[in-house]
Amino acid sequence: MRRHRTQQAMPRGPARSIAPPAPRRPFLWWTHLAVAAAGAAAGWALGRLPVLAQPPSLPTLPHELALSPRLRQETVMVVGGSMAHGWADPHDNSFIKRAFAELSGSTNTRYQVVDRTIVGGTAAELAKQRPNALAQWLAHDRPQVVVISWGLLDDISKKTPLNTFTAAIRSEIEQALAAKAVVILATPPVVRASATVDKAVQQRMIAREFAMARSLHNRNVYPFDVWAQMLGYMQAHHETFWKYYGDNWHPNSAGHALAGKLLYNDLVATFGTSPIAYRSDPGRGA
Image (cartoon, rainbow, N blue to C red; front, side, top):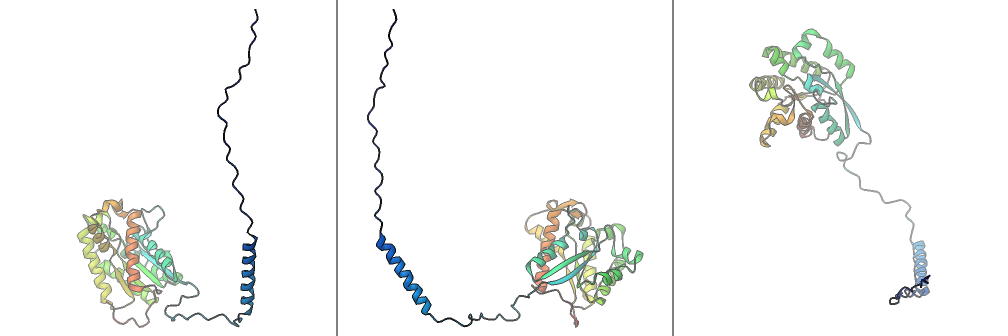
């Protein structure tokens, strides 16, 4: 017997209520008319204002505060060893290059650094083996600034006599001054050797080097002891050389960056934001 299926109707629930549409705001045509009238009145008033023949002049800055219309260019020649070259930094970006790059970015002078460093060399060796090299470099590069920064550890390792060392540095200073260049003596960053086994010897070498420089009584010679400042910074911040360790004789990038910042501070404290200029009447130095 075939059963007939009956289609069951779905139960109906309560009817959904549909929210009525929001009433439309009446068009306020009189508001637009008022705005248009106000605009027309303002335009009429503006047309009646007197027209200035020339714009008002701005106050003139004092000459010493006015910016130069163009950047000044200066050449910085670097003479020294591997740390002045930037050894152990992946881009050879030495502390000297970093200092002058920051000085270029904060003043109206662009400093172009020319690298005349000799990795593994000393000032005494340069004077003995290539006695005319510095004079040739000075004639070719024509620098406004000469930075002399020998690493000292090569001299200590090779047992260069102190008198030979200071005589070679003095010769470099005098040649640079004869070329009308400002001379900066910059000691190297702190490394493992100069913070430990060679610390006392390096201190004596720096003392003799700076005493010789001051004995010249020339205000175009500026000694900056970056090494001593970096030691003081590390002590004040409870740091050791390991943070700045590239190898026993060289800092890593962080060491070059810190030493570069210290040298930059010396440059700004000494020269301000003015170009580094040779004094034709040097007078008595420090």
